[in-house]
Length: 442
Image 1 (tube, helix red, strand yellow):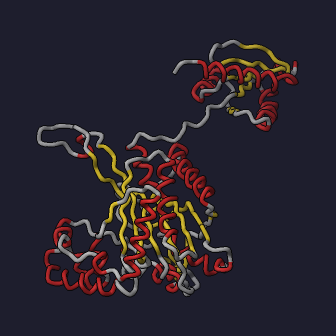
Image 2 (cartoon, rainbow, N blue to C red; image 1 turned 120 degrees about the horizontal axis):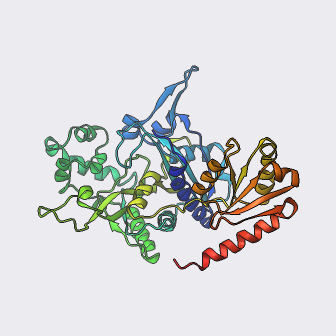
Image 3 (cartoon, one colour; image 1 turned 180 degrees about the horizontal axis):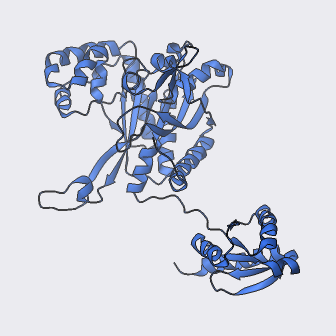
């Protein structure tokens, strides 16, 4: 887990603003669920045999004997809230979005932290496959609004309760005689949750899986029609996609539609992505981690004690998006420099300065000060570092005369201004300074 300082938070705030803007445009209302939930929300919802529940969840027992878990993902708590607050009686579908901390006890590495942030969009109460396409659309639009290009959408159907058992049977029959060539984790998964082996990145398992049966060949007719309609919606929306028959996602509650959005970035050098034998550092295209993922989760409601309800959603990994933005040389806007820095000299001026500061703040000036400093040099040095346009100097004489010195940081020119005239004069000077900066060729 890590601290987020002001410089770091600029990235998070940029992504949150983009998600909020798109959420508003598509009619999503914000929700924030507690960081702590009853453990069964995840054991029943996400699945006992998933990596999240088996290995990654932070759990605790309260003094009263309740078992709680730190939120490892956002969808199951939102379904719990939907059921608890009677959202079924709201106009359907209910569109909800979030920007929240998640917690997973996994090995920290690039793009993976034990406390991390996700943004997510959930469409609840809609069975029609058009919602699946809308989920992809709002997720892609958020990434596009952040300036990310070269995105790769991978989609698949993992079937329903009718056809998935048939595929599972054929899949296990294929893997069982070949399990000796697989990693230890996948040999365990073969007994508890064999479909999770499709998500394994171990080269041994990848070789074994090359000849495995594919979901698409075992879909029942309704699931086949559902997939075809989903792909037709994507084509109408002009969203390119890759049908990836190995895509399963790591949570048990998914059915039918699943998708992931990946970022392809040019290599920035051999030290990051490897050079060839000649030592060439020619940029190559590299598939990075998934930036966002989602799918349909109609069965999750019954697992949490409700009636089957059509629902689809997506989650965006904020830290992964920041890494992709850095690689693409996309940065949040620099914070605006203060327009005014207030310098005070002497005991009387120090007492009067906070009131002047507050007056200017209420008039919407971007103002800074360092009230604890007594030296004019140290205060001017701070004003220069902050990039202030003007400095106001308030000393003993100015307090007596009810004036203030207005000094330009660019030219050093200064004038004495009556306090009663300060605000209009300062506005005028700042407006002229802004006009001059806009005329300077860049």
